[in-house]
Length: 116
Image 1 (cartoon, rainbow, N blue to C red):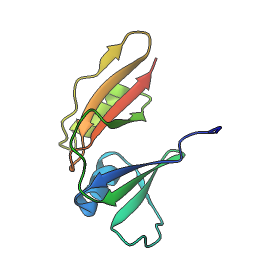
Image 2: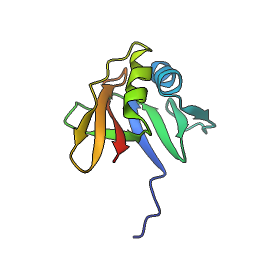
Image 3: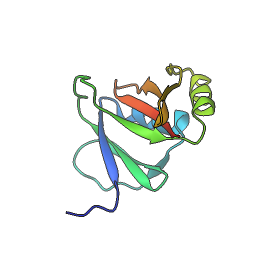
Image 4: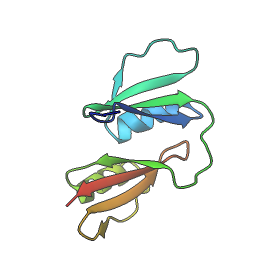
């Protein structure tokens, strides 16, 4: 199989409206049209990719996360903190990237990533 990239990542949330508000109002994503799939959810655009929130119980945190690429990790972390969300201090992973971490309202881990 040859992949040309990631189309979307699905993330379980226990409260779709709280998730939508967080991903749109805090992280700046845009709501996309979504067909009726028989369960609650919302599709969101982030750059050329998508995040699909699905109304199901989130799994226990065991290291799973997804990373959002940012151009300026310090500015991104500060902007998110200004909206009342805890973000770890950015740390540089030698010769790779800067990273900072936060948690969405459902407990899902999100990494902010600024490549070097």
